[in-house]
Length: 437
Image 1 (cartoon, one colour):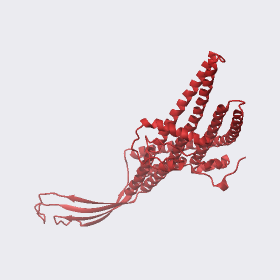
Image 2 (cartoon, rainbow, N blue to C red; image 1 turned 135 degrees about the vertical axis):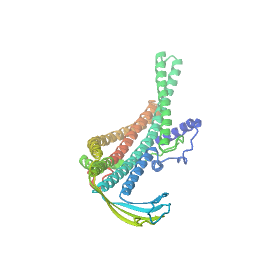
Image 3 (tube, rainbow, N blue to C red; image 1 turned 120 degrees about the vertical axis):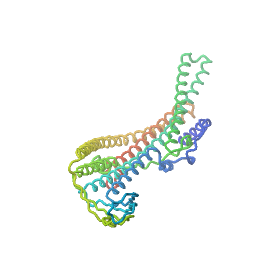
Image 4 (cartoon, helix red, strand yellow; image 1 turned 30 degrees about the horizontal axis):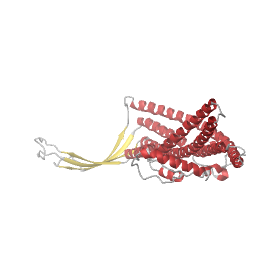
């Protein structure tokens, strides 16, 4: 049985004991067993609270576009009047009923850029909200991968600590036998008992981390209480990717990072709103059509009207000036936020690029360490069979530790690449990636 199979067996047995007291909540379809990373990412496509908030922001921005377009559209309404009068003595129609029903239509014809600025600002806000939604989806994918890896890591840690406790128990048992024969002192027995209790404590902590990691994965998959039993170790094709030059990654990030693009859209929206605020000082031209019916026949009653209205602001009490000042301050704020975002992105790409470089070297080290521990285990097994020495259990623990180190580095590299793709808006084409040796 391979080490990974033993790890999966340990995890399944331990989880079956842990889950006896857990009542699963009805949060959706049961999780697949075994669960793969691809299945987990598919389940993650279901909207969670963070994604629902991002979607709500998109819907609000879309409603803002419709509202801005409506201000420049045709407004049609009915208007009625029911009135009783005392007619004048010399009127031609002495009826007392003076009712009116009208159908009116009005449209803004030209407002010197006010409505077009509002529409452009609303469209920019919508574009920015959609980019934030895209980034939220990528962050959710990262979260699912992180939680999935946490479970596999916890399983391997439990396998290591379980083996270490077993080795400590066997050693303690042998010392007790020798103590009965008077070959070892009480101090040696107490020292070994202390080591055993330490390994037992570590195993219990690892066992609890398995439960916690599975609970966190179940929550992020919208299945709270449905703890996954067995997880399949992913292939991680990201580990085969070559690392491009920093300048290439930075250029792509500055151009395609979704949050940075969203900030640029917000700056554009702020500029358009400022332009719309300035337009408050400009005239407005609108057209209106009216068709009316009257209960009294009067010579001044027009059944049809077509009108052009021109509104020229003269004095508004300072409302335009305050609107301009407010939008100017908002523009300054989002411009500063964009500058800060660009600075942070530069630093984030550099740190992640150096982290990937370090992880490549670390990956080579842990592979060499695992190969050494694998050969050392074979040597210890051979010596154990020849009864030359009895450190086989310790060699197994050291091999599991080496496999855990390799697993941690592999997972760290996969997450680092996913974070880089999130920062740069996606992976570079293979032909554009420069191989760094």
